Length: 425
Ligand SMILES: Cc1ncc(COP(=O)(O)O)c(C=O)c1O
Image (cartoon, helix red, strand yellow):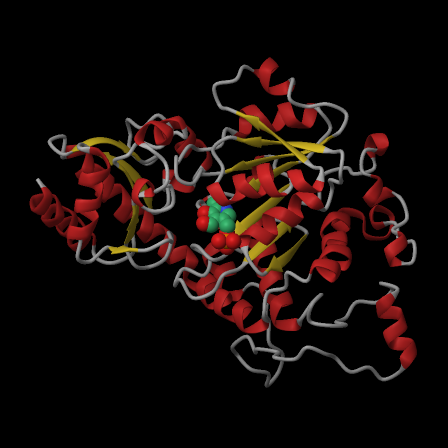
């Protein structure tokens, strides 16, 4: 089926006289006919639900829709995007191991990887896009367990170069994990470009209405975990699960099965059934919305480009002269580049704040990627404590504005920007 159809019809398929709309199974527990039936579930010998911390029918329907949208063999929803990113790595890395991450990841992910996971004894090594292939490969050693990048990086909007990095990472015998939050499965399927695992913050475009925090991990099912004995957690008996060998018993779904039965069981970063239901509502219109977000964002980016009197620079991969444009055309459906536009106003932090204060339709919020246009100036909010000099070292200009274009009429969004410019010129 086409993406537009999967967004609506994927996952839940009601039988005769069953509810047309995905039901919310608001139950923590499930009932069994016999103790033996339940014992089989515990031994992972038969499918079914045990306890909602681990799985739930509503959540499972949404997981199967997302797996279908991404072209994976299975998916596991989590309580947040952060939980998804964490589990995606921790599922195959332990104390003493390391992994390689791109330098342009979302700030929360960067902090999780470089600070919090370091305290667990897992080292994140940072790759930058200006590294040569040799420099990049020199980050990997025999304790390197995976690589992590973002399809469209938040907020630099760099587009991940699958053709370059996937073969390099695979030559080191490790899987590629991609955060596909900004692109969404409608605009890009990282698995089709060779990625092995995909994660999302469903809080963003998938929900699309800024209603629920959530995340998801999708398993591409193609990575061979048994080669080289590099992943004993998947190829040797799991003592915490009656000695199950995931690669043997679950084959292509080994990674995602282990993530659920072992890590979700132990960590409990569970998405609630009501949250999964709301995310599913968002998914039903994702395909329509992301096109509109992209069209509106391109119009906004073009307008900003024309305002050289007040705008210093504009980044948007959809712009024909953007440095990311060729990759956007290669990897994003029809070159559609999603809804976030980054730009720099002349006059630094003060001017950026004055501009934001003058906006009427676009709201100042700590969020991106929902139906309502919103805006954030990292220098005066998330990175407020940094001096201008420190900001630049972190790759953020003081006048940098992250503008998340909603699905209102583009004329109104542009006129809001125009009026705000007038007010602070
Ligand atoms: C690209 C990206 N990945 C992951 C996250 C983390 O997701 P969450 O806020 O749902 O934990 C975010 C949040 O902004 C994000 O933008």
